[in-house]
Image (cartoon, rainbow, N blue to C red; front, side, top):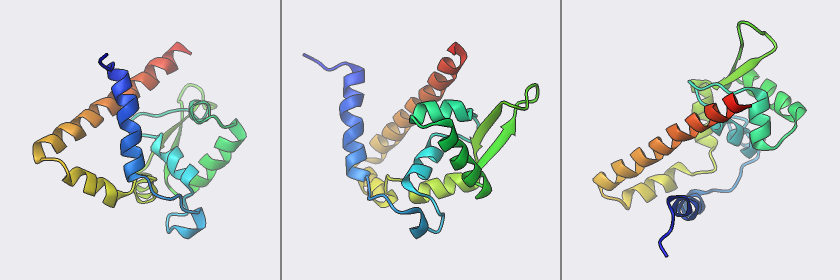
Amino acid sequence: MPLTDAERIQRSYPKIYIACHVRHLRAASTEHRLSAQDSSLLAHLHHEHPVTPGELAGHLGVGNSTISAAIRRLAGLGYIHRDAKPRDRRVVYLTLTERGAKAMAATSVLDSARIQFLLQRLTAADRRRAILGLDLLARAALETIVHYREEC
């Protein structure tokens, strides 16, 4: 029986993750002072599509106090930008800064060298198609976040 599209993604994604995953580093051992959890938190942010701390906490399965402490620390490092909603200053939106994106990439659990090696296994045309496909899935993921935000 042929696999559904969802099943194909569920089978493919872990293979990419396992092939490119590296050991988690301790925050103190990196120049960016990011733990694996910090880097993961940054990976859930985007520079153009803000999320609230509550949305982030709910998605990551952590408490509000945990997310608040992480946000304070990461904002202090210049990795996250906090922006209060104009009509209600109690509502804060988080976006990733350029500095945060660089730090996240440098401390990602997906190793850049392994990703490069993986991509070199593909022809130039397949590489472009693969990256385009991931970009399309990422864009749809952002739209999904917005959709579920509006439902709540």
